[in-house]
Amino acid sequence: MTFEIIATYAAAVSLLIGSGFVTVGVIGLLKFNEPMTRLHAPTKVGTIGIGMLLLASMLVNASAGRASIHELLIMAFLFVTAPVSAHFIAKVSIHRRDCDTPPPPKADETWSTLASPDHDMMEALAESHDTPSATKS
Image (cartoon, rainbow, N blue to C red):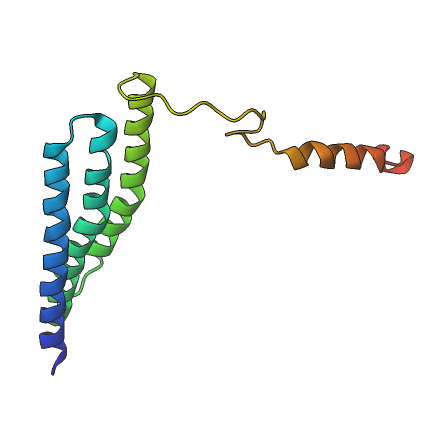
């Protein structure tokens, strides 16, 4: 088997997988009513579905001797922007109260923050080990 035949079969499989994900994404957009439930479908289409369609395009062009980097750049752009846009859509939905509110935080003060219980302990330990020569600098 030559590279052209293998690339053609791989492109066909990639087109089937990509079109399957796009179909599932369209059904998800049509079926779900709330923004938070509809959010998952287009993000998967944007990453996996369109990525597989672009991979098929790359394979066909490479087998024909017209390899280009355009598809890779488009994939990189989609893989970076799809999660960010999904995060913004979810944040807007939460702030507009279009969805159920998230569960309340745990009792400790470090839930969903950068602070950690170990951080306070490390600061206390560092203060107790400070020497006068170390604090003068």
